[in-house]
Amino acid sequence: MLYPIEQYIPHGDSQLISSSLLWEYDLTSFDWDKSKCIVVERVIERGRPEDYRGAINRYGGIENFREIIKAVRHLSPKDIAFVCFFFKLNKEELLCYRRQQLRGERDTPKSETRGG
Image (cartoon, rainbow, N blue to C red; front, side, top):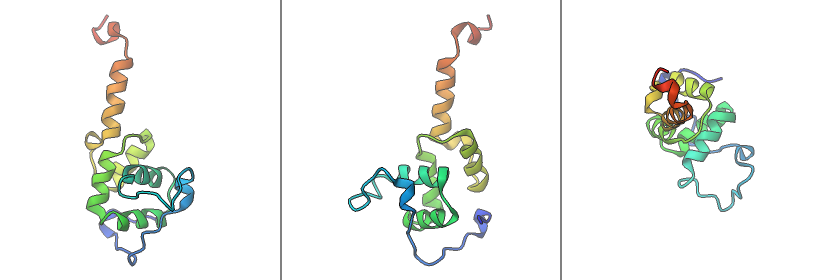
């Protein structure tokens, strides 16, 4: 069960994250720091509470985890709503949301944007 972020208490210093979230990578040579956005994206999309705790601990706490969330390139609208609510973020802070907005504007026919 996930608790409101204000009530988060680190459970030891476990940095374990389910290997099934990163199934296509060789975790024996995986660069956890270089790939932190991928890890956080997968934890948000498919992670269990233990994966959240492991990722938060691995990346230095809640504030660092929030900063990584802001840099994630792809999240579904549902996942965006979840992280904004749970981690007290504004969707405009998220790179993935801003990218979706730009794609939406680019996909809109010019006649619709000019009102005719």
